[in-house]
Image (cartoon, rainbow, N blue to C red; front, top):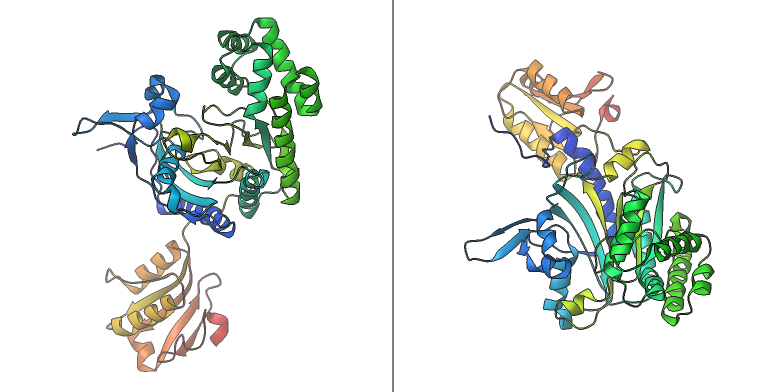
Length: 436
């Protein structure tokens, strides 16, 4: 007896059905914003991650040497892949480029609730615009995806920050500070105790007094961004503050400002982020970890060999993630179980008629099953009940001899007859009520 690998999940039909519903709703929202679907490979050169994040990231990858001697990895996230794709056809692509995809990713990390080694994300990215409207549209898409799933504004929040604000504040204390390391420390702030957090900032180049003052400024900035520009005389910092304000103003026009809270201790851990970043959280606090996040990464295309191209995006975990937990906490989970519109039941030598009825119903867009196992009447009826068939159409030899089929409503148990040769006739969704 074989067992599945730790961190990898099997989804049976009744479990997969609600997850498919979640994916479909998010993808439908993406299409409404003009995002176009792309497909990307599962395997990439490991250097796409190690070059940016260092060799230590190998511990988090499913990497190996292939038969050609290449160091490759199962992709842990999408952004480097789509950046590579943009570089490959940059001159031929109309700007802005708006892409989305839903696919699995693999990360060798500690398994816990809402975090697995195989996860599925819907990613949406905009390439070619540095305007605040692009950031705001990504926020609007993410918010609309959640409200389409049945959540309202009291049940989730976007904690919005700005990587350039963090960087310029850090440089105002010491030009020699290791900004990426300090930002990674900020990203860990809520996950470690205060002493470890201050140690990490000290390792990045701040003394302990500066580290505390820096942290106090971040908290003050959450309440009033002017506190930051008053504390540090820096044109770059002022420009970053203005940019954050402009994105939030655009978010207001896009109808999603109510979901956004300034949170400068939200940093996002990956080094390629540049401007506005955000993470989504459960407003009730019952799901303590981030639901998903995104942000701007204006330099990645150039670093991958392309022309300077600003970019912003979001990755929403749709399976093996915290999003299902959020939906379940707020009673927005679609519910498990399979659904079937019709079961066409055969009794005797009636296959040709049953098959014709099934074809006609499927042409109308319905989910239809019929017997493929030569089962008895009672066994077929039991199966129809197990797949939650709404209506059973009985094509029996006696019925057909009278030129009829029986139409049975499974919820009530009521049944009636309908003309066999004409069924389903002009009815788009024929039910018991149409013939009773």
